[in-house]
Image (cartoon, rainbow, N blue to C red; front, side, top):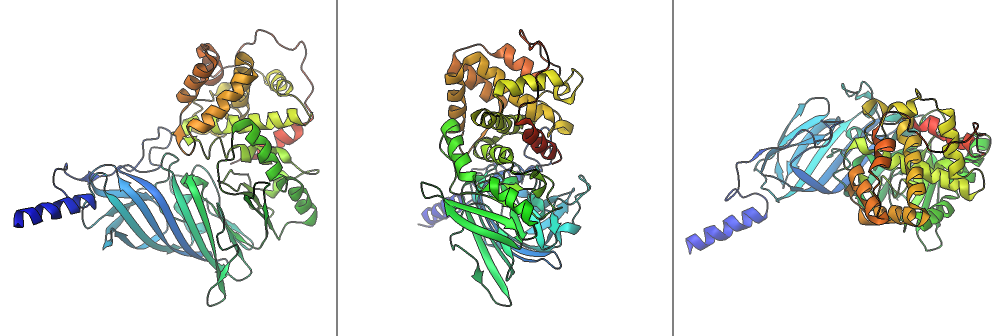
Length: 497
């Protein structure tokens, strides 16, 4: 009986992720997930399934206090593991037991649980912390990515932002669902991804109210955001009943507010149109957030709800940026990077969506835009001197990734025809929905769907850092399409990110 009981106990411990029988000697998890461009981003040894982030923020002092609960599964026998995080940690618990922790490197928190975690074992990690995010400067980057505003703050950025407000496995290769709950002073809004189950803030004591948001589909950590300040927040629904949360800073001048609304309020129309090209909208909600003047210097495709700089609006509306950021919901958010060097799969696709919108609205065809870019960029221009599928860290957000990435897609469309081209895009979005993928997987899919050998095309347009030759070219440089002013202005600001 004792032997049977001992065997049952050993089995139970193993299933709970705490046993050691029949397992290798536990070892530390890696300090990076293996990205060639950012070796210290993300962590090895575990896979996160959910983040529950519960915060309290005081705009006047920029003080953030929080508790983040991480649900994960070990992918090896773990003696310790890393989290990407910068704020001051007061305690860590792993599977209900206090854990020890220490700082390592620029943004690494090394956690040693009281008991090793076995391969495939469940991990519940609870981290309590506080700090002033704007004062936390990552030594490797030389700045704080946390953005203070006159009435609050914004945690919006790429390729890193999570470190400043929640501990994470910060790489797109480890996606998870999210609950984000933020207590802020009454009259201040806290906006995040997904839907708001309570349809508004819930009053707390001492003049604070709590805003809670839920993301139901897997999300890369850098696509999780929180925007805090005085905002006009509205709720509408799409034709099929999906919630649309839009928010506009109350600090926007009325003229800028009008221009922003003239574009953001068309989000449902734009995303419904994109759905006809790329497949069904992949998430549970839609919308957009427009930041106060002089704060956010770019737009970012935060999952379900892009954040926009007010600087995008000039001489009227700019639907091009709304098209771009929402195309990312398919290409970048639902289908995410496996490694950062493949970012053209995000930006080239979103840029080509702008071209398609231009064509739809008779402001310049995709061919017009291709011809204009090809003719007006000499061989030594940055668009040609980096390869979209291997741009290097310095060119991660450069024109080779955005504009030449779109040009590569246009060449693919010309080579395979419209039917196969849009079938490739829809198949790509469907087969890798809520997952991760690489350039090699895309090129193989294109050849499979089209039945063509496309190696020479992709080698020239994606992998060669020089201007590809064309068999036929316009006899003279074409004029800029009508849409080019919006598209180029959008990309000027996007490249600043």
